[in-house]
Length: 311
Length: 264
Image 1 (tube, chains in turn orange, yellow):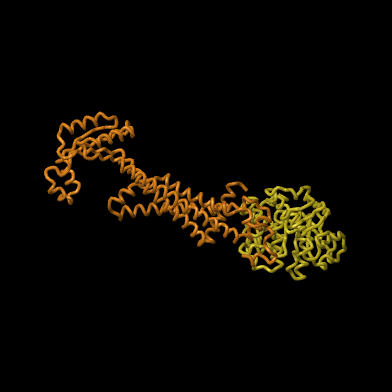
Image 2 (cartoon, one colour):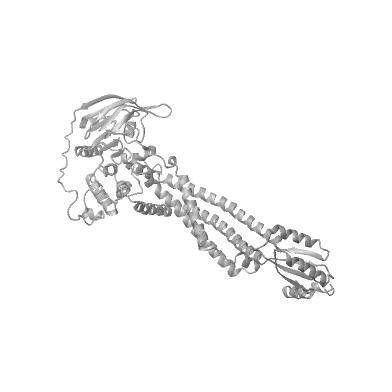
């Protein structure tokens, strides 16, 4: 028998097994689907967050807020010091009037908050684009610390601080996805292993006859390996399809910043393929793990009472 | 040729399955293996088809030492040995054809060749017309003949039968016995384990008697039964044109004979 013939035979037998024991097969497939769907969901959200962090980091800036009443000479001095720093890109000054206009435009419903704070409800500031190609983190941090001690500087807002927090959150989310996905995938592997072992037990009369007439281990185990692989692939495909459907529904029905930010991009085809492959590998691993030699039984293990009493 | 040299089989726990047995069975011989239950008959057969390994001594089957045969080569040994059991060991959910055609499938024969080989073999045991039946639809004698067909499908050099008539009434037993005699006359070595001394007396031949795992007697007994005439080799295996029997078996046209090849 050629390898291709064997593969066709294994696939046919595995398909028959899947259909015959469709309830337990469905259980295995759904376990894999659930584990890969949850892993994929976490991965999807963390990918979007990661991408967003990258974009924000590219656009991040440092804002230096002056103390109220700082004169233009002092502001120019500070601006000159900042412009001389290696990490500094374009520096633009925002007057208190410009800041108030921006606030009103961004938060029209909160306009009232600016009332009663005099002529300068918001301080003048300097917005500094960071030149990420030349940035020296330590030097920049030292420069910002010096700025914070300057008597005319009220506050220094560094975007990198909260971006770092966001990146930590993304890392945590990924870690959680890996742990949860790993645990769920392990559960799926065990489920598949148990189901394959059960199937092998149900077919042990047939296996014993196959051994008796001289079938090789490859021929005997092949259908079970393919059965595990098929269950895994089906589970992976279902998970990928569910993710796509869930993503589409969330974008279509969900509104708000959160949905558009967390689900802006869907997984790329290679990532979906990875998900399906992961399912297939989990199924195959489950089948291999379950079919140790002793679990398949030997030719002579069937009593003389016959098969009918056993099955 | 089967040769046992001081073969002992000890099971876990120390129970003896066979104790220091030495003998030779020439090619083409029919040998009866007898003795009370637990005497070691089944162990004797299992050692030949390597279901069990000898604890001491060695066993040659067609010149090959099966005692130290690597596990991965055991399937190839078994393809040269047919085994028949008292309980038939047919798969109830498979048809007669499917039960019989395991080995052709393992060997990679296409569906048409599988049907041809199965048809020829079932015809040999007189059951070609029941190819599509399920075991439960057959009588005990028919089920045993299907089991024999499964054992014969690869034209084995050796046929081992472990109490093949144990579940059959005397009439069917004789029918099955005649079938074994026919198979033997075609050159297959047959070892027929039975505790039915009456059956042995009917046929005669060489009789090995085991008791308490030891070979107590190795003797030739005269028989009463007239042996069946061997089938002529020139007799066609299948009719040149599709018969109703063949058509019902799914064969509409003749296929090249002997697609498996003797002995594999």
